[in-house]
Length: 87
Image: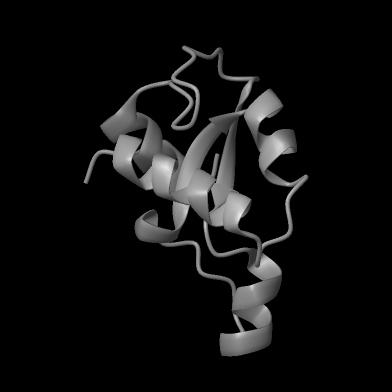
């Protein structure tokens, strides 16, 4: 398991940070708020920090990725996730 995913689980439990669903381990996924491709393009490396990652259920993860990173909808979803995330 990725160490940041473990930290996210320790601080936030096994809950989707978007819909709030309690998840089983196989359902919870780590999502990058600032996508990996954007990090690589702008900084040359992926930002796997706690601040840039979140836990979401597989359904919400697919939903999030249905939006363009530059869209208002994507950024609205990320704001919701950030509000639901423990520091």
